[in-house]
Image 1 (cartoon, rainbow, N blue to C red):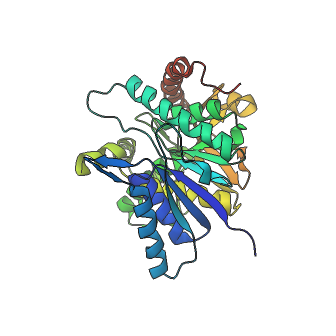
Image 2 (image 1 turned 135 degrees about the vertical axis):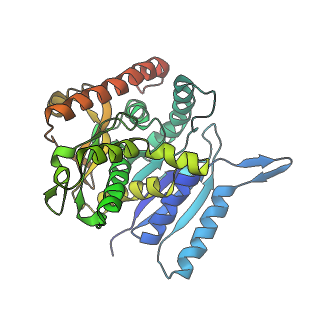
Amino acid sequence: MATRKVVSVVGAGNVGEHVASLLAIKGFADVRMFDIPRKEGDKVFEPVKGKALDMKQMISAMDIDAKIDGFTVTPEGEGYEPIIGSDIVVITAGFPRRPGMSREDLLEANIRILSTIISKVRQYAPNAILIVVTNPVDIMTYVAVKLSGFPTSRVMGMAGVLDSARFKAFIAEELGVSPKDIHAYVIGGHGDEMVPLISISNVGGIPLKDLIPKERLQEIIHRTRFGGGEIVNLMGTSAYHAPAAAVVDMVEALVTNSKRILPCSVYLDGEAGEYYGVRGFCVGVPVKLGNSGVEEIIKVPMIEEEREMWERSVESVKRSVEIAEVMLGEKSPS
């Protein structure tokens, strides 16, 4: 019998615990969760262990064969030894942007967190594939590339899968069709300037622009771009069901070696970088995923209008990367 793959999830907040739960339910990998303890007065709680125990009982109730364990770690990086043997490490740990916090503040705080985590991944799981979920994801994926020193094929960020899922959900709702029959990519930076590729999007082979009037389509695109904000305004917290499902989509493609083409934030350079006009940083493009990681970067065609939107999106990511480079300083591995 083939050995089951091991997926470690670092950060067991809303997104992390839902990633772990979905992975356990699907049953194609053993799951290890890592997070810091929580102190209330004199009492120290270890929520990651409690969540893992709860999920262990959940999959038992569902007659699913899978292993799931939780491990408490310290902010300084103690306790990561159980990450040994991980095939994939999903990093969801990090601060969300809070009121009064600048983009630079968020970058600095999350670079500090990633620096600790990645040093431990390098130490204990040097052959793992990294999936970065921590925001701002394109920048944090670039930071992970630099801090890990891993081949760029083994570092990717979750962005385009989520953005594309939101776009497909709104199209399905508009047309009253199954999302299964909708083919639509959203590429570029994971933010307000993401780029929906209308020119190649279709429903059952029929071009999207022939099914939805232009004005209405623009409204759907706007809703997609601000889809995360819409959920924050309704719930008071960031989305986690859809982001977790998007991560699991990527993990499944890697574990099953299915060669799926999914939009992910990846490091662009060389021929693909030249095609996309990106040299030496991470942004979302369609890639082929297999068990070795990113096996191919797909050079997707764009009409002139899309290319202009793409260039604006890339420029926005590039400005943030330049800020992150200054903050990285001497943290990059030698």
